[in-house]
Length: 435
Image (tube, rainbow, N blue to C red; front, side, top):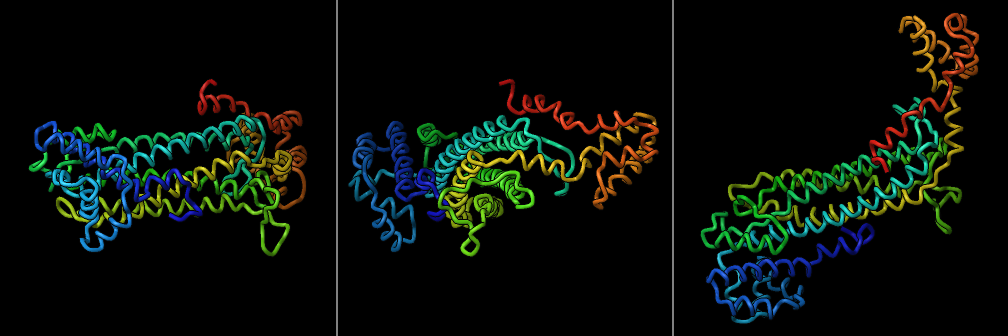
């Protein structure tokens, strides 16, 4: 997590002051429940809230205590006692560190998910607007990087919209899965803390009760959460890679916005590079890199160990902050993307009509020609065009093996660009609904 690729709202979730505030709230809500159950005095629960509700925790002081105690939660509780006073002896009754750490981590992941979901929704708005703008803008579809058949640029963006819509659903599911609370004490048996305390804290923190925790919340939940972030990052890279290819000099069908005063190269003043989409490719790789350690955190020893702790201290902030930044950057890129329909038209015509080869193939089979024979007839004319010897339509019209089955008018009818777009409206309705 570095400032260059961070945005303040997401970064704030992982700030030490935020973390200690969440720790305090967990402890204070637990004290409320214990007071109601008669486990601790009600005036103790009141004092805990009264003294620390608006306190600013001294991070440096907590760090100093931790250097001595070698235990972060104890360091926090010691500092909290300095703020609360004698009634602090009733804090953390029957609880264990993981009750605080795990519940807090899940609160942070839920808040991060809320921001990420909002990020995706903004991206979807940009994709939808640009998709409808270019709904019928013809461009070449490519398979293996080679010209295939015509599509529209709007369809390319609609595909991305559908993919990120699935990403939003996955993030919502991941949020639900990780939104659990565990206040079950050492090894998760509730021996020293009443389950009703957990229920109260969970409700107060907007979480669900973890059905069964050991001393920790099961890490399969977190593995799924970070795997979801990885899938969303993969979708970012997919779209970024498409833009990078479309901006290549030989293609130049779309291009990242180039602002006044921007420089593309320290050596070559003419350069306009796809720096944002290249950056997004790198950021996506980093988010996906956090998936494997999250998976490996699932297998903890017995009721708990802390092999997951160091991992989560890094991947929690880094993965969410990086993905948040990447989604925002991609939204801006799409919003300002320069699109060049004239270059798309030029590229469509670049292969001299070869993009219509399948239609001619089908037309011949419908006239009774065996498919293998029809394929050979079309391919032998197409290969002449590949070698730069002429125009596909002209070759077909002079091929007697073709013209004995198709008239010139019938051949020409198969070169209609609009034919390929007759179902664009249907696809858009599937993706965007009837609106």
